[in-house]
Length: 107
Length: 123
Image 1 (cartoon, rainbow over the protein chains, first blue to last red):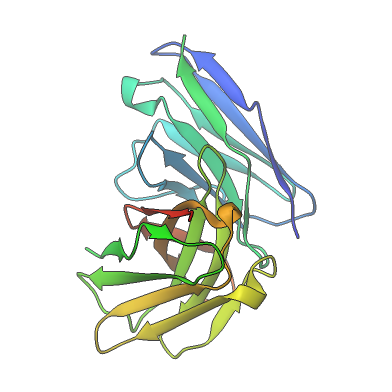
Image 2 (cartoon, helix red, strand yellow):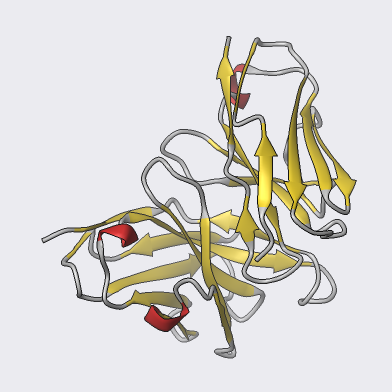
């Protein structure tokens, strides 16, 4: 199985900050990488697919980049609704696997 | 727009079979692939498997021997069964569409998701 490792596991930031979350795959996965946001008690929501494609309706402050084994999710200017847990997920091969999550908290 | 809704018992006894159904509305199940994903309390996400409307399936090996995913195109539903459950199967279970563009064996992602349903395994 492909292991997905996110860093950091948790992050404190303030409204307006720029934050970056990293995701590393245990082997090359090209651009087969997706990012999800999960608010407490809610289902995950897709933000970014194929490493850098922004899902329609998702604010442009979210950007994804990377290929191969190293990927990043950047939020350019944090808004109150962005405080949530973020997961990366590889679709290069089954079984599909997720990172352990990065919890973004208000400082 | 496509919406998904999980349904089924919230409490299952150990050694019994967990059964859930996902109803697809706003679109036909005869497109894309359809997945089940679970999240144990306070933990991360685990992909269980997916099914195509034709009935072809792909399961995660960690559950493969106990999992069956089926589809009922007449009802626009797909279902999950997990046999011989233990407390370790306690989780929120989500259904989701496995979407892709172009080659179905290529880049894919899960969108949209159902709201999730908590299943507790306990006597």
